[in-house]
Image (cartoon, rainbow, N blue to C red; front, side, top):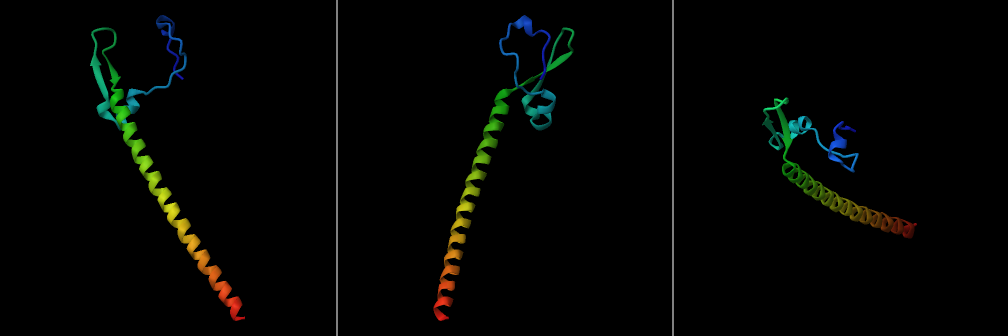
Length: 100
C-alpha cells in the first residue's frame, strides 16, 4: 500500500485506500486518463475519469452475468440429457433382465 507523507496534512481518517495508478489504467482505458499541465514544480500530472472506469466495470459485470446465465442453461441441459440417458439405460437393463 502507498502511504502518502502528506496524509497528516489532510487529516484523513482512512489510512488504507484502494485505488488505481493512472499509468496502468492508461494501458487498458486510455480515454480515462487525462494529463493536466501545471505551473508549479510538477510539469504535469495525470487525472483519472472514474465515470469511464465505472461504466467499463458495469459493462464487464453485465457480460459476466450473461456468460454465467448461459453456462447455467448449459448445465441444466446437460443434466436433463444425463437423466434421459440414465433412464434409457435403466429401461434397457430391465428389458434384458426380463428376457433372461
